[in-house]
Length: 93
Image 1: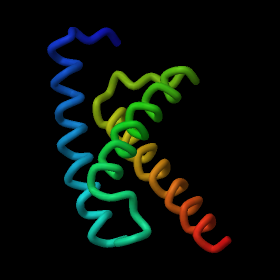
Image 2: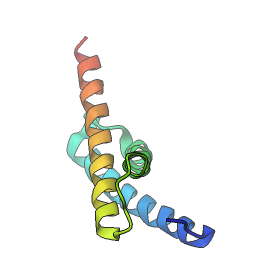
Image 3: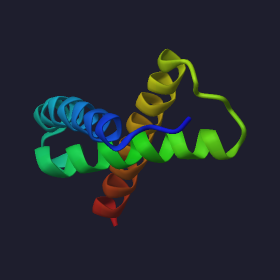
Image 4: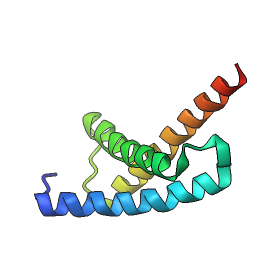
């Protein structure tokens, strides 16, 4: 899938908006276990795009938008969850 620059920036802006929304919610829920609203947003964006790239590299066709969003959201929340577990484990040491 080849996107023009305008569509790519539009997609990034939408993911950033969703990331800020979820990042703020996670910060309110997790309190000191989270990474702050901005940190959660950046981790959400990175996890989303990393999951889409990894799925694409493994040959999973993401031409269906619903499937791409599902992979991205799953990757974003998995990434934040793993880092939160690592942070909690490090705090116990």
